Length: 107
Image (cartoon, rainbow, N blue to C red; front, side, top):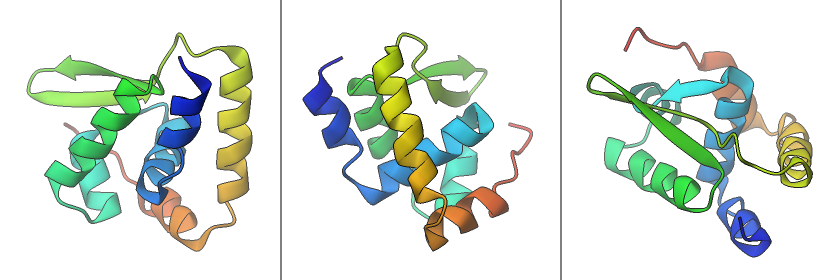
């Protein structure tokens, strides 16, 4: 994973919000992200695609649903940077709302 691409992927607020939810819940479904982020499915999918191409997340398909989780191949230094970045976001009002309102559905 290219370090510059890693940081570029985290330079957008929506992608940071998505990563905070994935880190907090280990795995999230696109349908749940659409609900929490209050964004169209196409926009959420576009951000997830960017995160996947950047090497931050990987996806698993179960039936008709796609679930996203942290890329298990992420190096320890990048994982540490990611966790520190997302820990600093816990004071962000929007991220706090996302984390408290997230309720995984039975996709």
